[in-house]
Image 1: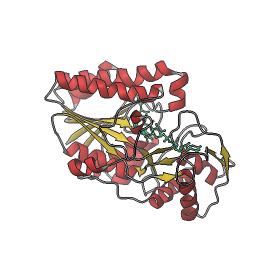
Image 2: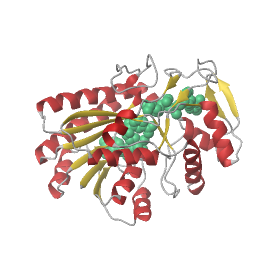
Image 3: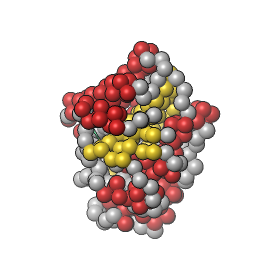
Image 4: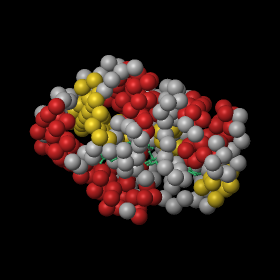
Length: 330
Ligand code: NAD
Ligand code: UFG
């Protein structure tokens, strides 16, 4: 299958491209490197020993999009490209609405014109807001608390409306829980600029002594050890979920949670990381981070039933691989 991957040099995109190439798909990537580096292209080639096409540019460039669809007979699009920093989206909401919404609208227009009818879209568990019960199922009500999350919810609405008008399209919405880890080769992984916002990248910076200690946001939640609980999923498992989603072409809109179904607390993750890497992670307890919820984990059974996909890697694998990548790329 010939698959266009938008944002294919990013954290999730690069791992997905590796999975798609390993499954003998032809891959075309578009990325503007707004949050990734050129070296990733070489690393993907090194891991897979396979070639792919790359276009450098912005998906909001209609001319470039048309060129890509004219030069390549794309059968499926996986749409990762977008901005994803929750905090920044609060201070710069228009930047988020502009990039995330406009890019998706232009992409759908270009697909329609090129008669390419399959799309897999990166949504997020953030669209569930604060769930009333756990685990979270796909039919739970949606409620967002920041502009980033709202862009995801709005794009889901756009895709549903688009599907009504274009019933022959196959639209898969994947709602990711907390992807962490890295490719076991240590060649690609997550490398955020500046001080990380997310837990695993922050732990890594403490492990590599770039930061002194971890701030744990809140130990007064109604959870097993009073710290926040999340559903961590290995990025390679997540990538495999995309490969499965591409294989399942089904008209209409189909929504799946991609999570492990297990909840680990912040303190549990720290302690498992310490055990696996034999590195002590000093931490200080701080007050709750605004907008955080106590606990969040998926019911991933629908993805198992319909896509024949489930997360297989352990939390130990996630810690080991994330640290290996950090060591190799310090
Ligand atoms: P990332 O920032 O590493 O990757 C996104 C890629 O898209 C980057 O390489 C960036 O340069 C590119 N990009 C952004 N805007 C672009 C544009 N207009 N044109 C071309 N390229 C553009 O992020 P990621 O972690 O790989 O996330 C991928 C997708 O998954 C995003 O849509 C994100 O919102 C979503 N998601 C991520 C997580 C997570 O925890 N990583 C969780 C839920 C959902
Ligand atoms: N945390 C800390 N210290 C830190 C960072 C995080 O204690 O330095 C805690 C948080 O309070 C939370 C847990 O670790 O309890 C996880 O926080 P992350 O920032 O790693 O992840 P979130 O669950 O807040 O959000 C992430 C992405 C969102 C996405 C969501 C669901 O950042 O974009 O997962 O997929 F929407």
